Image (tube, rainbow, N blue to C red; front, side, top):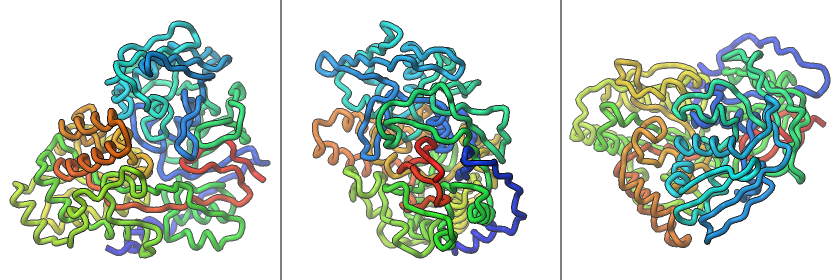
Length: 524
């Protein structure tokens, strides 16, 4: 499949929307990859919701560019009893957007809710003996065994993030979305101005008191220089490109690769690689419903996957912008493994894959492919998958939708004839697949897992061993075993790693490395 053939639909000639530019430099206009599908950063793993979460909420710890953890909402923390007792003290004067003080009991309820949904959180829950609030500023955590990864768990940037919300909201069933958006972060969400599919707005929180020190990732001082941040939802890439060149928007999160050379030649625009570990594309199956409830069928799919086809569709022919031969851990990180990689790197043979599919027992069941149209990279992945499924002789039903709809739809566990689904594609920041604890798609805990809901006692057991491993050598050995097991159970299939740039008006400064963060950014 040729990349430019699918981009033709994405870059259709549309009239330039009228985007009124506010006076002065107090409004920052940002174009995300997709609309904000959910306001609850615990309920979903959507990156747009994660980014919204860091604006509205705050976290106990923050993570810097070197993946080190620092107290954020905390004044400090001490450990006792050989690391099995943690006492964390909140900074004084923290307030929620509704004017109520942030209390330790709010944080206890927030941690407990998050621990039921998130991969890291579930590791915390397994180690947890008791969590309490002895007073208004102290969070006390008693563990069954030492868990040195606790600050990482509470301050990680991979979805779902452990945000602090009022106790009354944190008591919401973790499998239902919170009804209000009340945090203590540097921005307030403007629900009254939200226009689904078009506009999302936040305003500076005048009561927020930043930590001292320079901003570094989600750590340090979160100093806001804009009164207002607007997300402009603009699915058409050519429209965004024109708006950025004309100064009608300020920052485009991830431009499509074909348009980056044009933007780099345009006066007043800067680009840069903003995520060193890149983005890893994935194919996720619904393992509760046929045909992908059958692991042999999932293994047969691996034989048909050519990562270079997917990456060429997304990024073009320039191999400096992407990598194939990608396994279940991010390339270049300590856990990256070559174990079992011949499953993806051996010569591709479509006829062999078709025979393997038939031998696995595929009987023509309908395969519903969720195909978002508003994120060019994910649209490209879905186009390649649709073509591949047809070549394999599968009964594919590709259903077009926007990303916000997909996020809601993928939560359905129903059969396909009752609104369910079979397969979808998404991408993860490479750092989010750096180890087994934070690797959401590598879980095998059934209906407690992310949509797809794979069940694998062996994956879960190996993950538990990794958490308790005594040193790096033992961790690497277990990562090899995890990857080998993943090739057997196939919780998902990795499709390659892309290296994306971000683009913004050159008069902006202070944009931080990594995920899009909206503090520290200035004009001029």
